[in-house]
Structures are given as structure tokens and as C-alpha cells.
Amino acid sequence: MYVDDHKTILSAQEARQGKEMGVVRYVLSISLALAVAAGILLYAIYF
Image 1 (cartoon, rainbow, N blue to C red):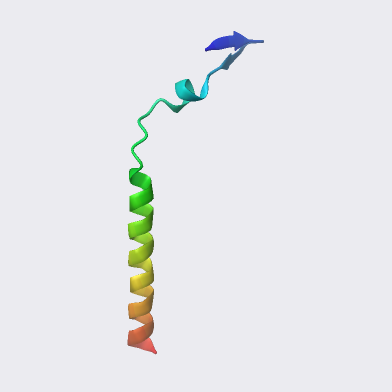
Image 2: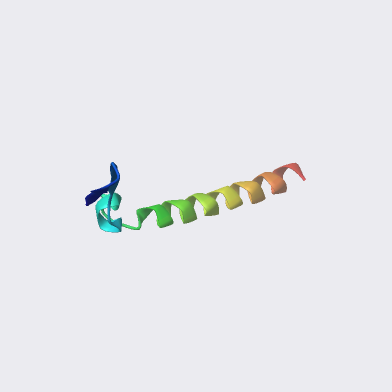
């Protein structure tokens, strides 16, 4: 980290400040699959 012209410049590692767990990928894929399944079910029921 350094200050340049009153701006704090951070490296990518310092700016991230968190763990990379990859959980979001699984949450998005599961929720997408559930949304598709719900859409197919609703389509089958009403049409």
C-alpha cells in the first residue's frame, strides 16, 4: 500500500481482504437449476 497524490493505492491482494472459497459458484448454479425446475413445473401445470 502506498499513498500517491492523496490517494491510497492497494495491491489486488490487499484490496480483496477476504478468503476465496468459491461458494458463490455453487449457490448460483443450484439456484439457477431450481429456477429452471420451477419454470418447467409451472409450465407443465398451467399448459
